[in-house]
Every structure is written in structure tokens, then in C-alpha cells.
Image 1 (tube, rainbow, N blue to C red):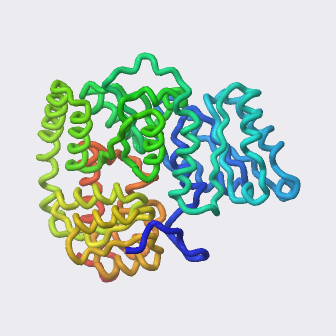
Image 2 (image 1 turned 120 degrees about the vertical axis):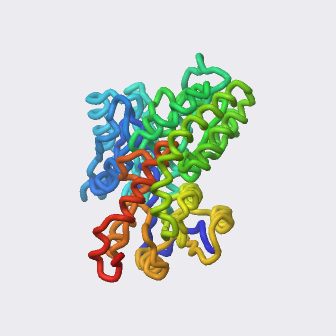
Length: 425
């Protein structure tokens, strides 16, 4: 199928821009200053976009902008940027600062590198330009810009105290506190977590992340570039994992234990999985009976999430009739074809009209997507599950499987749908 290419210029797409892609990756670093160099609208567009939780400081939840005006576009906004950085660093004392370039900055040609370098020298903290002009590509290009910015931090910290059984959690954004669940699993296995990249992230942890023995990458689209860079520069291998659903969660824990090759760790991992499943399975049964045979549609940002959701719905005896992503690659879609039934619609870079057409045609019982897909579902009178930025309940780990099942059950079986024309049950 045709995929992994830029959206058609001028056409409506569910995709986001480069700037948005970089923001969603870097934003959860909680003790860093995040300054958008551009119009205030860009900062508002991505303000608190992830809803990423922090275990301490919450500087990341403030959205700063240089608020470029017409005269700045004409005469340049470099000194305005320098002034904003000085003021914000003096007021909030961040551990680092990320400066995001927007479309207009790319057009007028402000020299972000020079300003960031100068302020970094004057203030004594890393001030890092993020080359994220929105017009340069799609969301995936924003991921690459974010990874390039993170690469300037990794390798600059002290690695003392890091043991041989250690890893970095990459591509998790701590929605609803999920990274805390995953950290607890790894700690029960006897593994030291050096850095969260980037959910509940801390600048100093990221600076010493090159001391870890392994990188585990969940959202491959967002942080795989960084993992590959660290493998090349520091010799740190990486594993692609998923914490969504029983099957992928279990496989991921065993894969990590297998990497370290320690028999005691493997035994602790088996016990962890046994204990969790003993609690989880009995609770799932009543939901499975009610949901058996229902039809689900999936449209998410990255393909890794789609894989896990297909397996999760299969466990619930539900049928996936449509699945797609915004940033999938050819190999991702080939894998989706392998794990879905014949007749399943597989779609890349769709638009609202196409999605609505597939949802109607397949008569789905529930649609799983993100914030941009929610209005489509509700306009059609279809139950919706937010599996992206705005959710407030953890869906990762074993407890996340139970939460997800409850949400799907509550959405599909709600009596409200009997009042939607043509959807009486």
C-alpha cells in the first residue's frame, strides 16, 4: 500500500505538523523550560497537549511564547527571543531550555542556533534549539527534530552509580501516570531505570542516559531515532516493546529479562506475570461475554499502538474491521495485515470524510482514536475511546488492560446509543 509519504498539500489530513510532533515528544520533560518562538497561537495549539503527569516539578505545563508580531516579522525576532529566555530562566531556574522554531521563524530566518548558544553561555544551562518549522514535513519529522534536540543532552552527564542491570524507558509519555506502573514492574524485576525519555522526564537523568545498558522503546515513531543514535554513538542496544494489552506487556517484560540473561531476574519476571494475571483474568470474563462479536475500528498516531490494540480486541473476542495510523511505514502495514482478518480495512494518512465512510460502511460498535477522531465518532453516533493525549486513566500494564476493557464495555453497552437514529439496540 502507499504510505510513509507527505500529505497532499492543501488537503485535509488527520496528521499534525512538524512543530506539533516535536512538542509532543519534548513537552513531558518536566524541569525544562519550553519556549515557542513564534505566534502565540502555535503555543496555544500544543499547550499541555500530552497531559503528561510529573512526580515533582511541573514547569512543563506552562506554555511560553515570544508572541511574534508584525514588526518582529519585518525586523526579526532574535533579540525578543534572547530577552524572553533571560527573563524566563531568571524567574523559573530550569535545568535546560528548549526553543521551538515555528513556520514564521523559518521564513524570516532568525538564527536560533546563535541565540541559544549565546544565552546558554550567559546562563550556564543547556539552551537547545528545536528545528521544528511546521511546513518542513509531517509529525514524524517533528519526532526527528525532537530526537536531534535530545541527542545534544545525552552524553553530557555523570554516569556513576549506574549498574549493569539498567535501562532507559523511551517513548512513554506518562499519560495518567503510566510510566510509574512500568517503572514499578522493572524495579520488581531488579532493573535500575536510569531515565524516562520523555514522560515524567528530568534533564539530569537524560544527560546520564548513555550509562544505561539497554534502551526499551515503546513509541517507535517518536524515539526510535534517538535509540538508534545512542546505539551508534554509545553502543547501547535497544528493544522495541509495548505495554498495552496482556500479550504485548508480557512479551515485553520477558524480552527485557531475556536480554539481561540473569536466571534470578527471569524467575522474578515469571512471578510478576503470574501474580498480575491471577488478579486480572477473573475480572475480564464478564466483560468478554458481553463484548463478544462486537466490531471495533482503530485509527491512532503510531502503528505500534495499533498492533497492541488489535491483539487486545482479539483477547476480548471482538472483531477489528478497520485499522490505520497517521505515521505508519510499509513494514508496519504488512504486520497489520498479518494479524487482522480478511476484509479488514487498513488505512494510512486518512481524512475525516474517509474515516466516516469506513465507519459507516463497517457498522462499527466502537471507534478507538485520538482527540481529532473524537468529533467524527460522535457526529456519527458511534461509541468512542480516547487512546491518545487526553485520557485520564492508565491503559498500560496489566491494570491498564482492565481499565481499557471497562471503558470499552461502558462505551459500547451504554443505553444512550439507543437514542441515535439507526443505532437502536
